[in-house]
Amino acid sequence: MGGFGFDDAQIADEARELDKSLRSTNTGEKLNGMKKLLGMMSAGRDVSNFFASVVMNIAQDSFEVKVLVYLYLVRTAEQKADEALLSINSFQKDLAHQNPRVRALALRVMSSIRVQVIVPVVILAVRKCAVDPSPYVRKAAAHAIPKVFRLDPNRVDELTEIIETMLRDSTPFVLSSAVAAFQEVSPGRIDLVHRHYRKICRMLVDCDEWGQILLANLLLRYARTQFTRPDAYDRSLATGVDDDDDAATLELVLQGDGGAFEKASSNPLAGTKGFYSSSDSDDDDDDD
Image 1: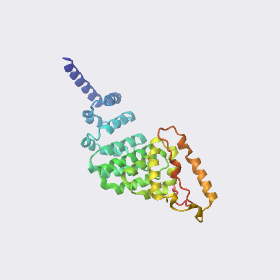
Image 2: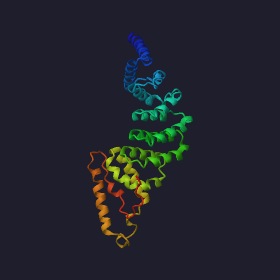
Image 3: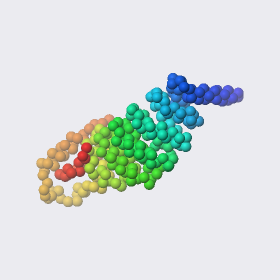
Image 4: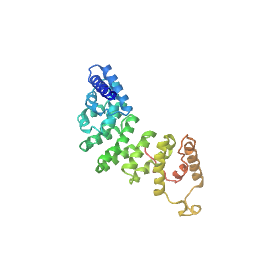
């Protein structure tokens, strides 16, 4: 049928018009072109051939255009690693952008470029964003850590240092991402959890359900490897134990973790109480 020829011609014309919009000097045309391009991407069409036309707009002053450009690059940077590498200076510059969303997107694109030669640059960017004032940017930094590790596993020591810093975070959705990075990059470094154990217990109920699963798995593993088995000795004969203090600690624990059972979640945390320690030693508290 002749319809196929018509469709091919129509697609070619559409691609030319779109490329013209992306290369236009008019901000409004660029914005419309980017919206159309992302619409095509969401429909499952291959739009990687527009990479060169899109990446040249990374230096745009328009915030709307810049965000759409980064959304496109996040999806295509891995496929077009060599072309993306040419714009690495622009990505680094945007790490200091006044808008935290742009900073986070710039880091996401940098960590998506699968070229080992830029790993040191990406690690520096992750280290910087790990202490960013915006929790949105810090979360992006936590997500970038496993990407760097998969690209270059030999960087585990540097990445572990960053994870150690991020485990001090007091924002629930940042902490859950930091724990996810810890579980993938340095799961054997359980010593990093010691000083943060009680904080993680307290923050468990403030995380979303997926964050709760991550934290619960970590706490479960920590409890199994670090706590004495309940039946290892006769607690009734233990000396130096204040029953009143234990009762008060248990009451605080039960009050603190009750929210985990009340959350609307398809993954109830039935074992939350078991993660808390009634130890009279408080020197493992975090130093927020």
